[in-house]
Image (cartoon, rainbow, N blue to C red; front, side, top):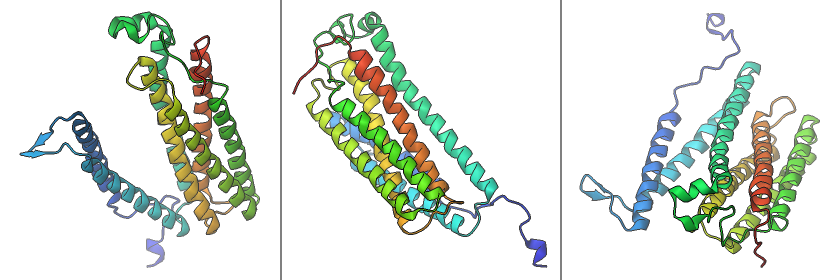
Amino acid sequence: MADAHAKKHDYHIIDPSPWPVLSALGALVMALGTIAWMRYAAGSPLPFLGLDLANPWLFFIGLVLVLYCMFGWWADTVKESHQGFHTRVVQLHLRYGMIMFIASEVMFFVAWFWAFFDASLFPGEAVQVTRSEYTGGQWPPAGIEVVDPLHLPLYNTVILLLSGTTVTWAHHALIHNDRKGLIWGLALTVALGILFSAVQVYEYVIAPFEFKNSIYGATFFMATGFHGFHVFVGTIFLIVCLIRAMRGHFTPQKHFGFEAAAWYWHFVDVVWLFLFFCIYVWASWGAPIAHH
């Protein structure tokens, strides 16, 4: 009788889970909370069933729920791996899922690049749909001083390229069962990611233009800011991998969690190279540079 109920396939049928429903609910609350926060910042009410929802707290409630679901869902995934459910077929499908996720992120950044190139390549058309002082018919817009691409942006480029090298070192160390090399490579990658974010924040503080004063500032901060957010998420991803590596979770044969983090980090590296050469270098060519 026991053989009759034994699993005879390589697929994993997961147990009923609350995480998909709770994650969707958290995302909905966080989205509504974002609108409520914007209304609150603008001093406008957001009436709903006799209540004024215009406050920032709804967003944070949704964020906490989303973070809780992420922790619980991924913790269950790790447990399933330790229980032997992640067969070769399951691991292959996890890789397909990560590839599709990164592909969706690529299209996400395509939207920001599209907005930037639409404004920069056709500044005369931007004048027709915005106030004329936004561009002056040129790019960068008249009166805009740009960030020196050979200062902090170049520094951050070197940092990210180095981080790509260290995470690759960690990957090769894991494949060769070098635990010390794996931990050191991950620790250095995390440190470089934190350093990149710190430099990015400092660059924003001293930037000679603002988000709201020109289409140049809006497209610049949206593209580089969302990349910075992805660096922040990737750093958290790598910190989790570092903790798991220190606990001995990864083996040379089974380490998809680390592999997914490495893929994501390399994706962040490549996007930054496009940002650096297109937005910092090409689009700033010949414009007055702000010196601090």
